[in-house]
Length: 129
Image (cartoon, rainbow, N blue to C red; front, side):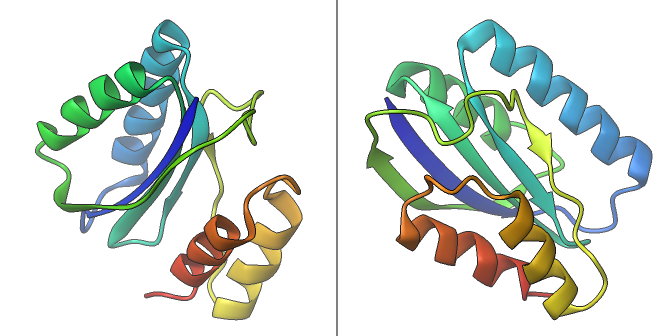
């Protein structure tokens, strides 16, 4: 079992596009035993993926071939004993307008069992814009 976190650029997506991405993530993740969360700040995605390496690599190949994603950069790739988000096929955490509101929302929604380094990566992403 592993956790991956990547960021990508996907500027100017409409809410319908984001909803379609989320729906596709949930459908594909169910089929491949992947869980995680998705953040979008209006310019960039951050996605946490959890699952078996081969399934995560399958998901990453799909993302790399998705024309809505550019500049994909993997920030985290670590083995884990258990999932931090076992019930989230792909949870979208909506970000507030201000950096502090984003941080507060994430603090409230992120699983307590996340590795502290991974938590910092996700919280720092929330401050970008």
